Image 1 (cartoon, one colour):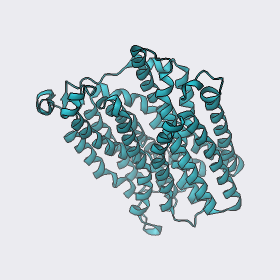
Image 2 (cartoon, one colour):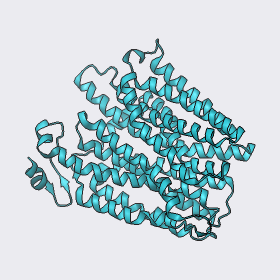
Image 3 (cartoon, one colour):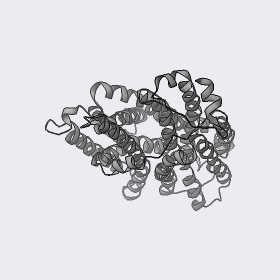
Image 4 (cartoon, one colour):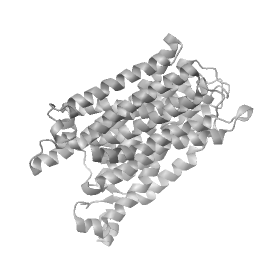
Length: 441
């Protein structure tokens, strides 16, 4: 079977016509190896996509050292706009894989990252660059945010249902770690003080992007059997639970992206005496907590873990408020690390809820197949809407700073939102009299 897969079915351009991972013989005789050969370049490409997407989060707090004079509102705009663009691109990027092929789209989407990376290097090297141009280049970084959706969609086609969770978990974790990696690498690469060379923050991506495109071209495949399921997407759109879960995902994944984006700037503004290099810790612990949240959700239920995550997130934010009032760096850092862990765990827990919610009432094999397809559509929609949290949180801080001269009002609003989200989760999925409660969502 391996020879057939490698040489008989795969055509010019990397296309594979026969692909049936649910067939255990097919999977054992070469299918698994080909799926893994596609998974690892996909993880690397998605890792770079997240890194480019998050690049402005660590560039913005260092623009002043490079000679730029920006208002607080302008700084938060530069942090927020990549998330806005990335969230908007997630749905079309999902459908690009069946249209162009997973291998082809991975190559194209990786090479597209040369645009924000190259323009970042060009613009930040000149302090006379207008804010409008900086905003445009920051918006282009949102191209990296779309990569998550296409990468997850592509890998889902390669793996059988029994192994899909692990493969997608590895793919997602690899992407999320790109945020921590760029926040660690940029301060080390650009130097400090008068010797700062901020353009290196863009230049360092170029060889890595070319490597990602090469690996995708060399190792990955396109599947002719990968088809866009518009009916599943439509079924998800018309199911009210899609929108409830998407709302909750703004609070978990959106918080992770939003706080990852603003954390370096908050550190720089509130505790300028602290080295910016530690900013990567937030995104790192949040990324590592994601699979833990999924594991705990398998044991205790996704809804219960989601509620617990919102409760811990609220406590973490209240700790940050106390830290700002006392100007305690230790409390501020500790509170935000707790907050990041809770957002990561909440990501895994909320994701785990999706198949469980759509499986309720699927009492026949046909209904079970439909439920799986609707759940897949929900994952795409929730992932896109959840990413808008990466825009809302920075803009919330900007408005709070502008109107009140403090971050506290925004933080207190976030606490209230988490309380509401936790209450919604309880009311719909765990309240004893709720229809979903008996299913143990």
